[in-house]
Length: 225
Image (cartoon, rainbow, N blue to C red; front, side, top):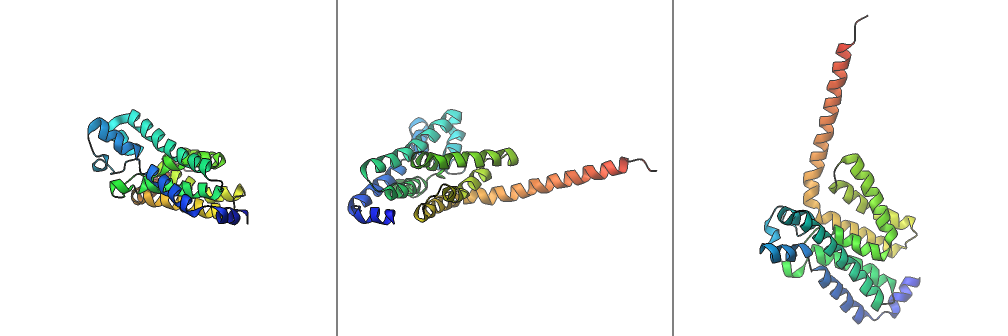
């Protein structure tokens, strides 16, 4: 296999240092330092406790959301670009996607309390293979149109990434990495899942109840023959 040959000729010492560097780059959580600089506040003590854009917007509004999203996406893109620039093996770039997202979700200097990894993943994947981002956006947009929510459609779009990789003829190593990436992002959203799934079920039951009541009303209004 070509990728096994690439890994065989790779300098493992340099690769390890490179991936550690990528992890440390991921540890630079934009939202935390942005809020700390502007408000002298630890964003982890606010709202959900995440350093991600959604939580930052509670303190800094829409501007904070946009700056945090852009900063986290850029570090993901930069991580993959740097690894591809300095290493010939494409598989190192695959590992870099995982490493930079892991750094964002579990930043060492913040005692492993970071963000959810969505923006960083999208930025990394955009450089790694932009077609995966196109698939993600398409699935996400369809989910939002149907559910009128963003969290569950976004996570479902991540879960679909391995299937998208298979469709794009990615090999087993890359499919395993995409599966791991999806697992990390879903795990980081575990609290959201606990809240969103029962809420979604409740909304569906409410809609079915309203529909049933409407049907009963219509039947009662029909004239008797």
